Amino acid sequence: MTDKKQRIDIHAYLAEMEDIPGTRVFTAQRARKGYWLNQFAMSLMKEENRERFKADERAYLDEWDLTPKAKQAVLDRDYNAMIDEGDGMGVFPFSEHTNVVMTARPEGIAVTLTTADQEENERMRGVIERHIDRFAFREAPLTYEWTDQ
Image 1 (cartoon, rainbow, N blue to C red):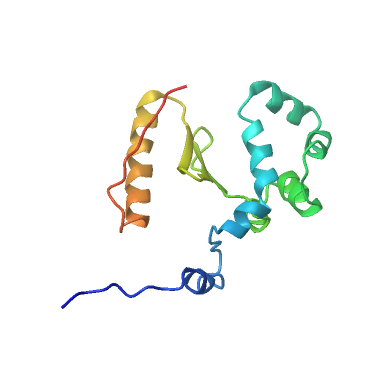
Image 2: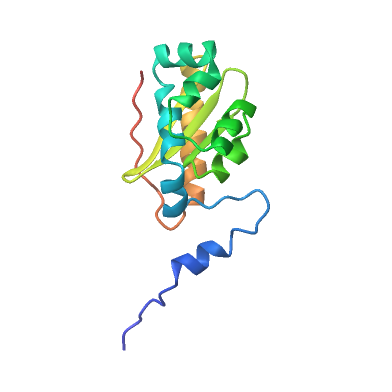
């Protein structure tokens, strides 16, 4: 006798979550839709790009192939609207000095953690790892590679 796992239709499974208030399920369709919004966000990792953006947000956004809705979401700092526009990135501001940006990539989730000091950085790494492991309970415990910059 063999025990076969029942296969589920992943598209139907994910579609069931679309109507949960405040929940945006990251799908390949959303990833394709949000490619340029994600590229714009990643460009802000460079100081010179952050300075250009701060100097004239609209002009900097116009350099990217973004939809008008995506541009407005960035200007309004409306993170839910950014996700609705397909960005595979989640921004989690914990405090004035601590924030996390998670970006879905083909090889896994890239996490950018910004903290005021090393002690807070180490504490937050543990928080993030525990939360991701809890969310990905079928695959947990996951492997994490942290790089200081």
